[in-house]
Every structure is written in structure tokens, then in C-alpha cells.
Length: 546
Image (tube, rainbow, N blue to C red; front, side, top):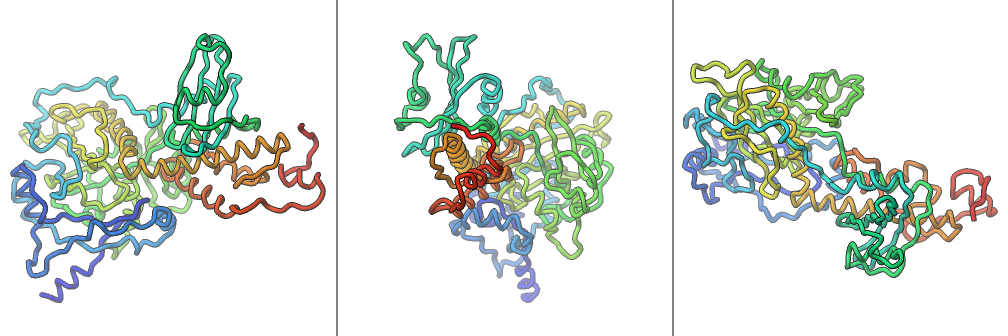
């Protein structure tokens, strides 16, 4: 028996590497219990080890976090075995003996998650109960960055001027000024590492038009520069637009987990291959099942050429946005791998996931170990008192959980959280998924990563605009990105919008790596002046600009 226990505790559990490094957290029985008696009794069952003589020792939560960029580089590789860690104690089947009236989601004793609706607010959730159904007009999709499209809307098609500077404390600055003669006002955008500031000023407030420095200080009093450089690069509007909209994405990817009756572990949930008619009906609400080979829409990281990520997926278009679902049962199944890392590598790197439940087993918030997954939306089919489905397409009960540093997001759940109309349920669920991801970006881990990404991209943009402008004026060029860089290098400095969170961060890594490689001096060029000009622009000069 002891050898068998030793063999059990030597098994590995999947651990998805995100962008932060860290540890795997398991439920510990030493934590203080919650006041709710039902949740207390359930978690006590889950926490009790099968063999008291060999207790499970949780990982030290103060373990040093691996450096951020090294983890991202590992993420791009195929080292699946590095994504494994120790199993927790096995869950107990006694949980199912508590009764059928179980919530959709339970939080671990260690906390760290909020749940909507909370356990103490659980009321009669019969689909026949009276409920207030919110109108579709109240299902508003959140904007990730309200300032992102201002330049495209108010500057690109009007005469305007941009400037660059490097503040000793604020870092690189990119300023854009537009005179709106019809409204007799100045519109100004100041881009800094932390954010972009936007404002409008009536021309009548000034005796004469203010300078770039004065306008910048009107937006941010902390600006401490004496001069801004004029941007004279002809393609500057394209680079500035790309930077402003690098956080704007019309594409989203979400995980879909299938939890059957009695399944309480990550390994059980990820091992499901068969799809019931009930689950297929739910997938049809999410979107359309498409063939991946040759698929031309947003693929969400799935292989559309060689079938390495399965043959089918669920895809939909929703209010001008494309959504790809990583359905666990449609991703490749690997015989002999109890952890199904080929599935975990996709779902574990999503930020939000849907959990469809068949049965009464609750979903434990941290049962899926991942640094990226910050929010789960659980859905369960509700039956009538006579045991039949409510309504034509069935009624769906919904519960939402997210890590405690994720701000609340809409649309709010109705009371009770039951949806009997399929069209209303689809509108609510897809809106909730999109808003969940946007809200998750405000969590501490993602916000720090986004700040680092933005800082790298802004530094590259400022350097690129300055160097290109100096070259056009035939001034000496000192920049980390050479003037003869190919178009792909320019795109790296200010990537096109819509690439998604991780893609933008990888671009920032490339920009930073390139800066390190070229640090310490400019490249040597030889030959005549004509040859130098050809090296700088990448083509033979025909027109000499003064």
C-alpha cells in the first residue's frame, strides 16, 4: 500500500506556463473555512487526503517567480513535459452524496476568487420562477481603450502635426496636434508610457497659438522638456495609428470545457471525448462548427493547414467581432497522457473559459491550473419539476467566477440567473465573455504586462519617428532601429492593431531584443555618399530632399 501511495504522489499534473511564472496552488485544509455551511462541508470532503499517514504538502507560495521574458520564450517552444507538476490529493466521491442542490461553482478554501451569484444569495432557481429579463439593448460590449481610435477618427483625415521628445522622468513622448477650424479649437493627444491623454482647447483662450511644450504641459503638468522635435516622416500617421490601436482587437478566443457528472478534477474534465446531444446543442448556441483545414477566418492559434489541432472547431461572428472557441472535446486526444497537454496548451493559455456542466458536480475555481485563465463562466441545463427540459431549447442556469483582482463586468446576471430563450442567452453569454476578457486585462498580472508592452512599443515608435525625420532632413541618425530596416522591422516597432494580447507582447520582445543587439554604436557604412544614401533608404536615390 505504501509503494502504491508513493507511486501516486510521483505522478505529474499539467501546469500551463503563462507570462508570469509562478507556482501551482492546491486547496489546503489549513485555511480558514467560509461561513456557508454547504460550501464548508463540500470543501472539507475535497480537502481530506486518502491516506493521513502521507499528507500533501502545498507548494511554498513565496517561491521566486521565473523572469517574465524567459517564460514567454519557453511558451513558444514545444516543451510540454516542463508543464507538469505534482498531483494534489484525490477528490472524494462523497461530494456527490451531499445532494443534488449544489451550486455551479465553488471557491477554494484559500480564496482568491469572487463568484456571482454568491452562495449565500442562492434562491429558488426554477425556470418557472418570476425573473426580470434584461433587454438586449442593455448588453453593451466594453471598450478596452476609449482613446485608441481618436487619432484615426479626428487626425488622419485632417492636417495635423506630430512631435517627439524624451522626458527625463516620463520617458518617450509622442504628441499630436490638430487645428479644427470649423469648431475653432485645438485637439491634442499626448502618448506616454502609462497612458494616452486627450483634450480639446478653444483657440479663443490663447492670444497666440501655444507651443507644443505648452500644450503638452496643459495635458500633463509633470512634462519636463524644453523642446519637442517635429516629425517630418511621410509614413508617420500609419505608425502612430498602429501604435494607438495595438490594443484594439476584433478577434477573441475562449476555452470551452465539458464537465460530466461526477468529474471534479482537471484530468477527468480534459479527458472527455464523446459529446452528448445536450452538449452539441449548447455548442450550436455558441456558434457554427467549421472545418479547420482551409479555414480563412480568425483561427485563434489553431492549425488550419495540417490538422495538428483537430479537424473541427466552433466559430462565430458577433457584432463585427470574430470569436474562435477552443472546445476541449474537439482538440487532439493523446492516448497514455492523462493530463492531455495537447488540449491544455490551448485552453490553459486562454484568459476566459466556459464550463458546460452535465450533472450536479460543481466546478472548483482553481481546478484548472493556469497563469492565464482568470475567469470561468459555468452553464448548466435546468430541468422542470417533472424532469423535462424547460422551454423549446431548454433553460440555462449561469454562474460566473473570476480572480479577486478582476473588476466586475456586465451585463449583470438576472435574478434568478436563468435564461429560457436561446437568442437572449446567446446575446448575454457572448457579451459576457468579451467583457470578461477586457476586464481581466485590468488584473494585476495583465496590467503589469500590458504596461511593459506599451512602454517597449512607445520607445520603438518614438525612436523610429525621430530617426526617419532626421534622415529626411539629412541630420545624423542615432537609433536602435537602422534607417535601412525592412518594412517588417518598421511593423515591429508599431504593430498593426488586432493582433491580440500575447501577439503584441511578443512583438515588444522582438523590438527590445533588436535594441540590445544594436546597442553601442551605429553600423559602419562604406563607399561614396550616394552609396550611403542607398543603404539608408534601401534603394538608389533619384530625388534629393533638402
